[in-house]
Image (tube, rainbow, N blue to C red):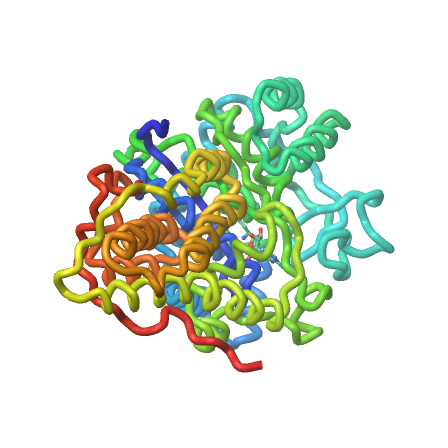
Length: 492
Ligand code: ME8
């Protein structure tokens, strides 16, 4: 039984100097599938994505492009929005960290944790990676370079303000012991061990990075970009005063990549504890895509552009591949061959073929044909398993359960030799098959919205979750209007 409730889901806000690739696209597709699923089952959903626009990295990219910072991010953000539109990402809000309301929210947040005695001034010295906007200890460096991206690091010493992260070690451990917070579970263990190993206080200001929000407690300082960025999850709801904050806080799922798990699963909860706000329910740390088993990087020239794939194969095909090819928490290797194999072997041969065959038979049966019978095929749909997977934020398993049913429906056509049936037997088979296609159109909708709608339109049916079972009266009551193929076979 699904209970109706509010559902607040977010993606990372991406750096506004990045050219977004299939890795970024995956986080947004995962969040979109979950948002659409929750809307489908009747939940009150708020879905946020956005852009992270401050910091040294952005400043440098703007200078390299010969542009003013704000003009540069405006230009980049237009491309973000275009990509999300092309991918049918149904976000309710696009938050930009250069918006006035966001900047005010960040300052208000800092003032609260300052009042709670969690901020102090000290000298900061450490190895700093500009690209990751992160300080590292000597021990953390890998061959003297940034352990995250492998770039050069530099020693920085400066006055800074610190957040008492260390003070929250005990409360964080207690929270981790009581809650299944980070998914997959081994990522929770990883973070638990790091917390248990001891937490250093973190600097939350920079005197030198001026493309940033002013630190409200000292006019000579600017807020560290990560604190600025994390507060987007509050400012997107209009915190502190917005009605959406009351309606949607706390977040149900923060979808992130495994690279930023520390900030979301340790720093963010500690900041929220300090400010007295409720903690998110789940951090979903997704795995990374490599390309033909190599890390995606500009220097290797192997960064996969989602727009090119959408142009070539369609948004739904890309959404399908990104979710189906690997478990959300796992790493995976992208290759165009594997993508084409899934289009031809699954979207064309399983789903497209099923819908085409069934609608051809239904149309052949004639305008006055009745599609009536007893539910045989509906029992093969493992609805409970599917609902459990989606509730457990395991959308790869959810999609697998739907696919299992699509294959059962094709098996039903073959085993009953549906094409050779007549009279009551044909009517019964088509009742089962048309109802199967109708239910599939609803279930597939969060994953492939255009395809779900196309199937529903051919059946004269609606995408409504309460209709998501075979009709109990034993009748298919849609109006058939066969269309073309859902997916085109790709020649290899
Ligand atoms: O970290 N495979 O932004 P970012 C899968 N602004 N996902 C990938 C990926 C890959 N190869 N590469 C990147 C930031 N990602 C901060 C976030 S949030 C308050 C601030 C995805 O532009 C993944 O979701 O570097 C990762 O967490 C995110 O892009 C990082 O994007």
